[in-house]
Amino acid sequence: MTSSDFTGTDMTARFRALHVPGDPLLMPNPWDEGSAKALATLGFAALATTSSGFAATAGLVDGAMGAVDTLEHAAAVAVCVDIPVNADLEDGWGDDPGEVATTVAEAVEAGLAGCSIEDYSAGADPEIHDIGLAAERIAAAAEAAKEGRGLVLTARSENFIRGNPDLGDTIERLQAYQEAGAEVLYAPGLVELADIRSVVSSVDRPVNVLLMPGMAPIEELAAAGVARISVGGTFSWVAFGALARAARELKEQGTYGFFELAREGRELTTRAFRLH
Image (tube, rainbow, N blue to C red; front, side, top):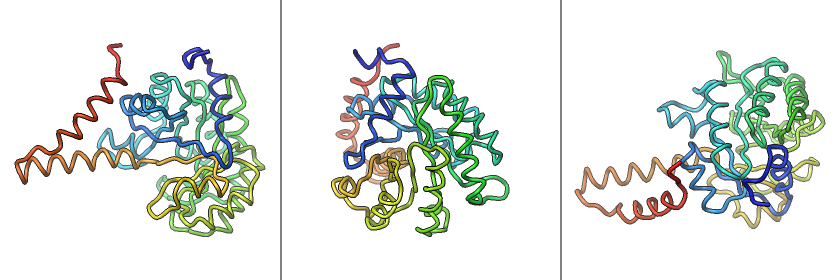
């Protein structure tokens, strides 16, 4: 069976099977269909959308894209590659559990293999949800994730990237989300290997970590029991960084040293892109 023969249900099962503690899935985050095809061509087994990377394609900051545009974007990424795609659905665009369930149901319908839901609301009054409400939201999302072809639900505790680096509260939240039905747990912003080990040993679900400056290498993260590793918006920022360096060289130095990098990029896109 080739990857193109997988149905949506098969793709979800395939994605679920890739989560192996100690043998982490490296899951990079494309920001559009072109970058998704390029990363798939490079041999990654699964991809995840990034809210910040997607917003950057429209010249906007993270969180500026709404539910409709984000779901359309995630569906377009999923259909353009033959590997599982996980969608960053931010806070599910609703404080009410029913609203979050509706968002996850739409992600199932869109053909996503997985999605993540945060416990942070970036609305008019930004806040980390009370743990009780946060768990109710994950429970509603988990029920919606079982419908139809289904998808793998990841629950995120946002403490460490929202100004509340409280490891105890983070673990308590992830345990509550586990009991509420989340299949994967994620606390972006953890850097210290000891903290990551504490999270992994405190839960019974696969744990995703976000690569951050100063983190241990992949081999040590694997030894700590991590099951999935993502990069968030980092690759999109790398692309903008390369653009800035090339532009500055042209404008300030009048030289063209960037053509070697351009050659590498063109060779990749030639392999990854098709006429139709």
